[in-house]
Amino acid sequence: MTDSFILTLSCPDRAGIVHAVTGLLAAEGGNISEAAQFNDQATGLFFMRVRFAAPAATAASLSPPLTALAASLAMTWQLHAAQERLPTVILVSRLGHCLNDLLFRYRSQLLPLDIRAIVSNHRDCYPLAASYNIPFHHIPVTAATKPQAEAKLLDVVVQEGAELVVLARYMQVLSNELCRALEGRAINIHHSFLPSFKGAKPYWQAHERGVKIIGATAHYVTADLDEGPIIEQDIARVDHADDPLDLTAIGRDVESAVLARAVSWHAQRRVLINGRKTVVFK
Image: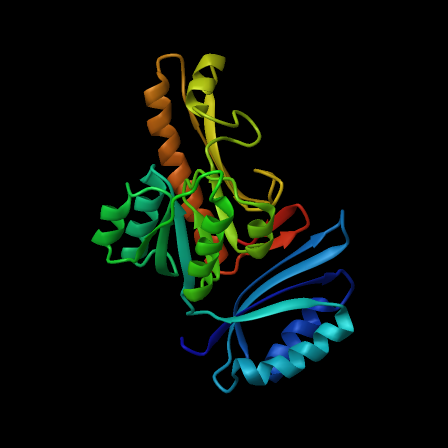
């Protein structure tokens, strides 16, 4: 339905919030098709996501009553068209498994994305980008050129109007300045069940430790390396017979699936940041 919207909000918890929100939408001719809420007793915050159809309403007409309600509840809110395909830029280095998975899902209409560009510090994934007819920007990065490279990267994000940046195994640590510029709209996939086995060759480290499960973590990018709010995690069981190459293959499958779920939920406005954590309305 072209007249459907998704409303997300958070505010201090109190009685009557659901009644106030649903009553407002009803008064504007809205018909709710999906609603989810969460009361965080630890922080005293309330979170809500509502999908609704309002044939006689527009984002402009809904803004004044929502703004008034927000003022009375100390509420932050966002309203989006439900059919919106999120403008996205993907960052990648040499390993293309996560990029390949995202592109396949995107082409198959399984992700509500509008992938506008792919940026890489290497040329390895150019043929893959070209096969999907997506612009590819090669921006090499060295210690000496990092500030200039990040400026070019941010220029691509801005010029493409990207509302989401996906680090699909982009093996560069972003500066604090770039992290702040992308706050709340950059998702990274980490090749372990955080915080274990950081750094190079994680599956070799896992093999040396004789692990029985391996995993992956998708999280928002922050200036604290690999410490951003976690969106999704998953694991796969392994045993003594699996060598490092087996673990790598299994791990890459988990990474791809975890990143795809996190990106999909973010694009559907199902993820709300709650301090150092997230609320995910699946």
